[in-house]
Length: 117
Image (cartoon, rainbow, N blue to C red; front, side):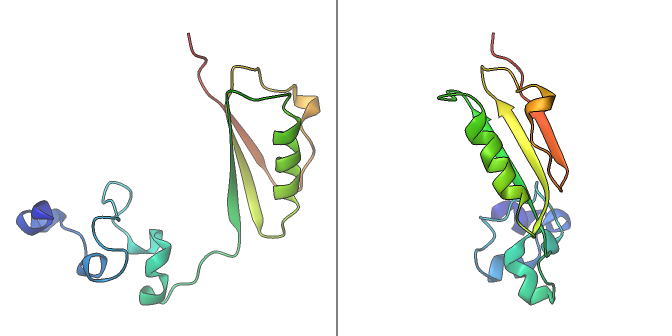
């Protein structure tokens, strides 16, 4: 709060401080554009995008095989509002082979985490 009062050149918009959820919830490191925060859409006259990005975060311990993750991927891809799917793979188990990943109508981006030593 004090930094926004002292350093006016990097302070956040007054709308951020005077509207819910408030200035302590909106981090300036994320963005300085209010349109990047959905709770200000109405004040700015913006509408939310009609599609979403699904993020699936697979972490250790993955109890069984990767089948539940792949089923979730298929279910998310069936939504007419899904634009793309990002899979974050942070498991001790290796990624499933490419031929085991289901075909989907939306792009699927798989990001493999670094293995733990």
